[in-house]
Length: 136
Image (cartoon, rainbow, N blue to C red; front, side):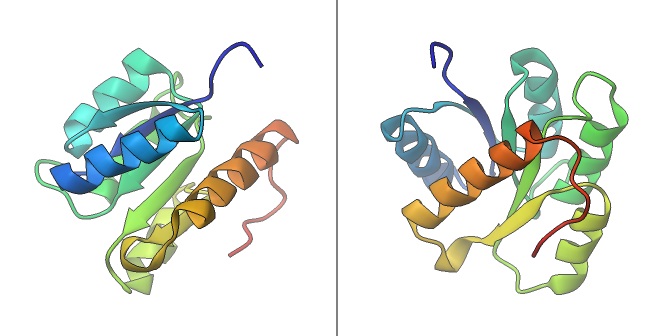
């Protein structure tokens, strides 16, 4: 695989953003970051990532707002999105899934290998064509 898979991480906690980008790079991905929903949408358009990790709770524009915009734009609507959340707030998670997010991770209790496996699974689902349903 010549071209690295590019992942956009949209996360307002700088320490976590830096850690996620480093972890993804160590796993062989290309990773770019954005610190809020507005910057996340801009980078989704300019960077054309293969997958977006999107925090739900952020300043300026939250993850739900950013997800709506990403899914509304023709140039970004097909990019798979995995929600990152601290919340055990299932209402927000189910909103995000109904808006087109493919999966989610609760930040407090994921391990790196779980994150990488989830990213690979979502990318494989995207390559295998339109999802017939969303597995949680």
